[in-house]
Length: 193
Image 1 (tube, rainbow, N blue to C red):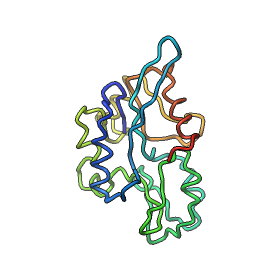
Image 2 (cartoon, helix red, strand yellow):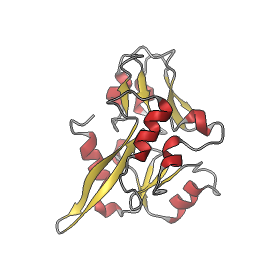
Image 3 (cartoon, helix red, strand yellow):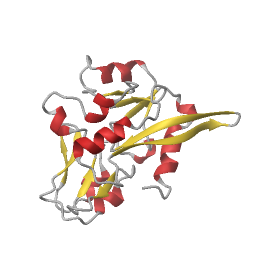
Image 4 (cartoon, rainbow, N blue to C red):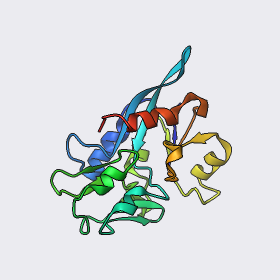
């Protein structure tokens, strides 16, 4: 997924669409948009920073799962609720604070890139609903995909680049000097949930 930070207006349509599509319980989020300030005085900018599971190629949540409930599937990270024992190790291991314990099922829950939709040829709910067309989804290995073309032609950054997770959510539209990655890291290490 590629998210254009210049286009995002912070309307939260992505958050609402995700909640409806995935029956996310009230008070919890699989996808959200935070308000962030980037840059240094005197050139400080306000940025709307969408946050979700980064579907890491080297996912810490997968490594700590004792039952194999967290697993890779077609370059995404998924959770098999039948195998999840609710130990919360994956929640603690996620450097992006992108997981939560579902209050009813008592299983780990997170963004799935709407795998149930994508595997049928549909776009994830957040992509389909983005009024600013700030989100792009596709196979980064396919040179003809929008995602691949954007990553090849535009400067991009990831959150927590030093974590070694090799995330699959990229941000464009702001230069790395703006400090978007640092803002994401600061938010991740704060007390926000």
